Length: 470
Image (tube, rainbow, N blue to C red):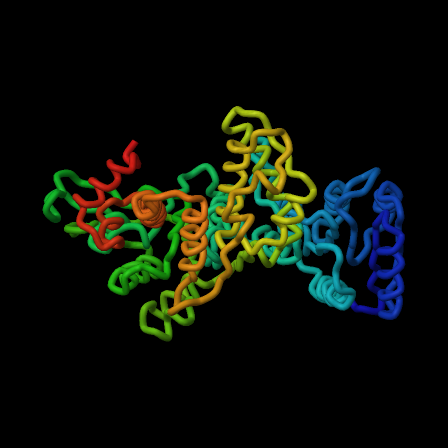
């Protein structure tokens, strides 16, 4: 269809959006119709169908998804561009599953919007229709209104129903596994298993067996045949967390599986096949790992078909109040105790923090405040000491400066006239080291002991002395 006869409809109850789009579109020599009420546009569809329909999702009379459905009943190939100022994952998914040509979060760049409309006119591609789910889907609880998260939602909405490999990049604690689970739940594989494995938390001599399984007698301790994660995920999704830490020799086997879909159990001779969708995640820079010879370049090409970059919490500060309120509510409900609310001062203060541990750290703080705050409203004095006096990220000998807060602790201890400084500080110090290392290894005790530089017996003895085994 030529550009000269293209007809573009704009449907939005926001007068400023209608005016901006009408002015910009009128310069293109297209026929423009603008509607302030979606029910009027719905009636107009009975007589004629435009070349492109641009409409808001949230409108007071008929919402954009309903309008799009009605338009597709008239012409299933009609490109529909949905706009919204309330961008979230559900909106993006509903848009794409309903057959939208594209999803445009507000505020948008007018040149970007014009380019999108031009592409829709030029291609007039068939709209992919997707069956609406009969059952009520569970909320995915991925919160974000920041532009960086809107882009994440847009990509997820586009790729979730497609059987393509996705690499999820983001700092520790940003919610990479939550994104992977959402991609699975929104895919045709949702009724099949979602199987996750952290390749950094399993010793390399056991990782091959964990992934591919083993035959009875394949090695010492293999008393029975065991299926691996690929077999367990057959028909569903396999999530490879911290893929950057996978040993190079196993990367070769993984590449072979991705290329031809077949593999062997450890000690096995019969080829097996598993129909799985691969989702991978890492907090590392994969290109740097390739340059350092620690990751196969050809494997990265196979994994990095679609990449989703999860922003750090400090890069989406406008989402912090939303996350704080969400976790204060859900954690109180989970613990079955009274919900606490944050004072405006606390909310503003927490929004300015850097949150090195991202959402994982924020959630932990919400649990702490829910349990430890004596009143109904959280004040600054109720915050944990480390948040009231956050440690600066001063680098010292390549690491975080932990000596400054330790000196402050020692100074305050002595100024209070107390004695036995070392006797009281040492078990606190060791407790922190053990708890953090256990969390890092997903409670793999042998690996924890090795990372601490201890033997297994030493870790057991110290854990028992500190009451950690309880």
